Image 1 (cartoon, helix red, strand yellow):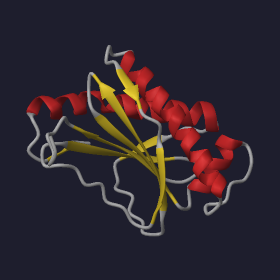
Image 2: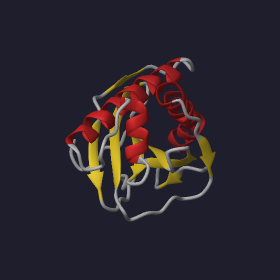
Image 3: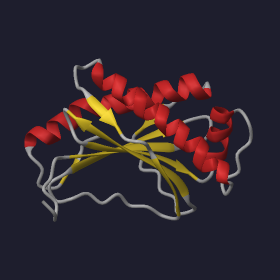
Image 4: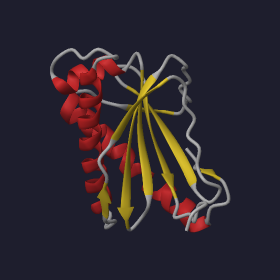
Amino acid sequence: MEPVVNSVSAEQASRLAELKDCVVEAAKTVCRVTCLADLQVKDDDQKGADGAVLAVFSLTGDLAWTVYLGLPRATVPSIAEAFAGYPVAFDSPDMGDAISELANVFAAETKASLARRDVHVATSLPGVLRTEGLEILVQHNASAVKMYYASPFGPLWTAVAAGRGEGFVA
């Protein structure tokens, strides 16, 4: 998939296109090792307005990325149970803990995947949100790419927003 480019430098767009596979590799590894399931990359946009859980973390250092893990409402309980080892209801307080831990492992694996390509970053702690409809907005001088997957638990997606923009505040 091509990055969505909004007035971003060609170098930033090229770097994102080159390194987004590290996110895909990390997602596949984490799902295989922690949930004992394989992810299949899909080309289609998975639309759904019935809610989702979104985990977000930042990578800083040789690059500046915000990485997202999106889990549609129907996918969340199954993947959380596979990861945690016990049933986790979509609306329960344990859902945030389970997906936060899953995202923390995903962040560490993304960092390791980038390090194998000699790209060094630090990771933030993940934030987890429960949503009812979602659109990722990026600054005018950033780019983003979204990758879709099929899994035994249901569909899911990852996304990366990249750029070192000035934003509105210096």
